[in-house]
Image (tube, rainbow, N blue to C red):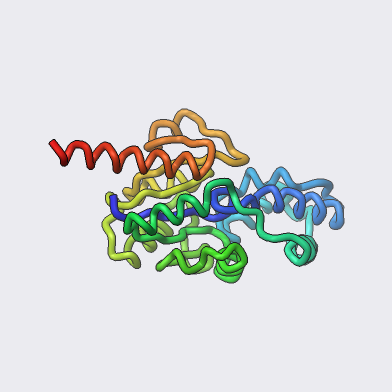
Length: 225
């Protein structure tokens, strides 16, 4: 395995809980009530696919443009007064992967401007040589397109790439692409399918680092015999 592809929301940054609060706020503003639960329904989806899920949930009973405006208003205020919430172990894992020579990419369903802003705000943009976002591909997770695009831009076969994910859609996307999924749960907890297709399920990114380090030490020990 020579590359690691990272999801972003809920994996590198604790942004999914921020979205729960944003959609609670926006939902109340437009008269549909606290709608933060829609975060779970749209995990791993790009904007186009998310809008379809909202349409299925509310039909014509809400104004998507008003939702977008109030959501953006809440997020702008939040990030003006708060740093992007970084998940435990991110810096430790990134430093380890760079030291060991792994090629690194991001495959996030969020739009490019948002992904790049969060990466830069957290000081990790320079770790990644490839960034593929939801507005750069046609089909959203759980389709494999975003991971196939990341692998292609890295110039790596999927079978040599780990994929770090927190959502069901993301895990299935990576698996369908031929990558090796590793799960770090956030809002969504793994089901039996997630356990079957994941190389491991770990409580945080620091545990992922320990797992990869253990594999490296094992291989080194085998080579010494």
